[in-house]
Amino acid sequence: LQDRLGSIFSGLTGRGALSDKDVAAALREIRRALIEADVALEVVRDFTDRVREKAVGVDVVKSVKPGQMVVKIVHDELVEMLGSEGETIDLNAPSPVVIMMVGLQGSGKTTTSAKIAKRLTGRDKKKVLMASLDTRRPAAQEQLRQLGEQVDVVTLPIIEGQSPSDIAKRAVQAGKLGGYDVVILDTAGRTHIDEPLMIEMADIRKHADPHEILLVADSLTGQDAVNLAKSFDERVGITGLVLTRMDGDGRGGAALSMRAVTGKPIKLIGTGERMDEMEEFHPKRIADRILGMGDIVSLVEKAAENIDQEKAAQMAKKMQEGKFDMNDLADQLHQMKKMGGMGGIMGMMPGMGKMKDQMAAAGMDDSIFNRQLAIIGSMTKHERARPDILKHSRKKRIAAGSGTNAAEINKLLKMHRQMADMMKSMKGKKGGGMMGKMMG
Ligand code: GDP
Ligand code: MG
Image 1 (tube, rainbow, N blue to C red):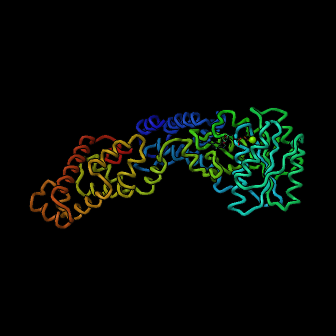
Image 2: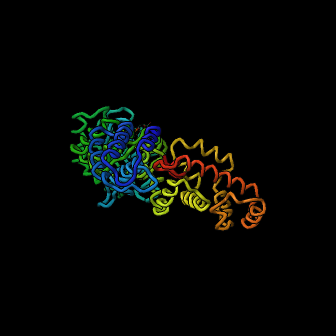
Image 3: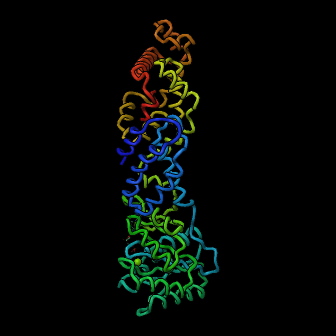
């Protein structure tokens, strides 16, 4: 995927406003990325339509390519669609607040029930009772009892032969009598959605009147996510989503699919089998993961923030003319420093890790920018414009002025010569410049 994203960036050139063609080309790749991330097809279609509408005509920040700009718009739109940060379990109701966990078999309902119970008793100092309504799997009730023991949370005593809704009623009753703040109802799943499951869930709901109904879903759920979320929402009515197994290699496309079709917030993320492996939902993180593109978005953001538009235009003009003096080099160094130095820039570009290592090996670390800028700062105006006049005595003076040495000055001069040559060879070509090269 990164190769493909890379090719969008090099494939698209031109500046100004995003054209239909720019957007269409980038969206083709984005569509593929979303499908690869297991976002449901109908959601992909809706989403790309929305982005197309937003993107066409948007101004492209100088120094980034149209393809990158589209990626940024896509990312922002994804974050927005995924919903707000910090949506959490709502306990704002008379005690005991009933939380009902629903979902397919193996999605992580029982595990998540215990994780939530642990968090509510520990961090939030609530008095919590858990009950398993799973009468289908022989050991299910026992599984919850054991997890309860592990996290030190009371579970409703098991009575054989009771129906799920009977257990639900008993749990709520026990919650009231025992002065519990929260009652968590762990329900049975099925391998796939069927009518009996929906009837069972609706029946439990009727008897327990839960304040929260959380649909627990495996983040690896692919195209089924839409149907799953729709069914549970329409038939049972959910108040939020929990995505489990975000520790796996799933790309989290299910988050977007389920959020898009239900409009319900993603409240929690399961990140492992252990009882403390549960996190709040951060839309930005999931968006990055769905697009799977390293930090390209932050690169675009930084570029937009930091690159002085006017300077960039001046620079482009100079390059057109094939001129590149020490002042220009100083400008480039300043911009690179602002963008987080070599490490910052290189680290953000897909496939650039190796080049970064090579530069580090060659001694091109971040502190070097400051020394290079000091050298240029110790030059006279005339020397900066005509660095070729720098001979031994001038270099000695500059070394003393900048606290460096002749070897470092020679290195910088060599770098300048190479860059100036490169500029000359690109003379007349569009989008040149060191930044242009690096971004391309
Ligand atoms: P249920 O059938 O919906 O109740 O699912 P369970 O809670 O019994 O979970 C099924 C399996 O998934 C168990 O082995 C859990 O340990 C595991 N599991 C649950 N949540 C996570 C998670 O967030 N990450 C990982 N890696 N495993 C999980
Ligand atoms: Mg279970």
